[in-house]
Length: 284
Image (cartoon, rainbow, N blue to C red; front, side, top):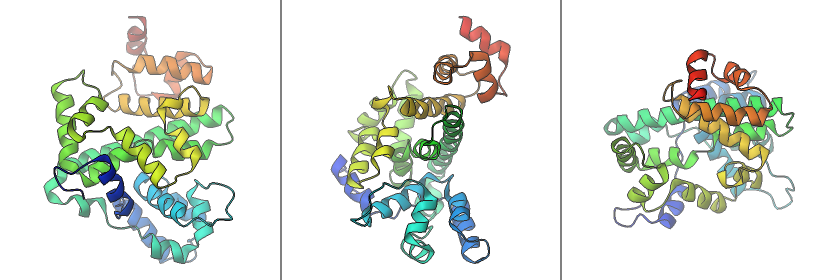
């Protein structure tokens, strides 16, 4: 990884383009089991094993885009389609589910590992919300929206893997100053925002245009992007507890997106929260 004092944005983009992206332990186990079971191994079972791992997902996407055939007319975002196009032999050989995130971080960075796993869990929850809302909105791109939501914070995950100490420094700054925005904390530590890094990686890796658009909050006026943004916000805020002060605004925004009442939104997204408490917060 880039040496201290030379960690420019361009250095990180170059490093992350060449780096072996680690994967979750459960993903590696599931794929190894499928590889040894020909009766169960197919593109759908492979996708099922990968669909909740943003790191393995982007690992596959990066390889696919780097080896895309010139005659390929349509962009591919779905794991099942990628495996069908590459074939199992190529997939397992060229894109093995390793190393593991635990191996990359090591025992010295257990605190960072915890934060990485929390971020992955948040991404999984957000992608589930976004998928459900896309179906409710009769959006035929529901699977692309799910995948984009899963990868919305992929730059953050990559930096937890390869720059854990700096990421812990960002977290410490925000703990010390609750009003400090994530972007400001990231720029103070890295000299750039993780959103900027993600955009640069997307361009360097030539990721599908739809994926880039869906993961860019600056396009939030589009319904599909709005879906992704609101799902990410809800997952992030609810991770702090269902009494988080930002949730009432989230419920209002989601209600507008889905053309539902706030009460109905609260029922489908936060069944564990106290309805009365949330109503009180909305009335303040």
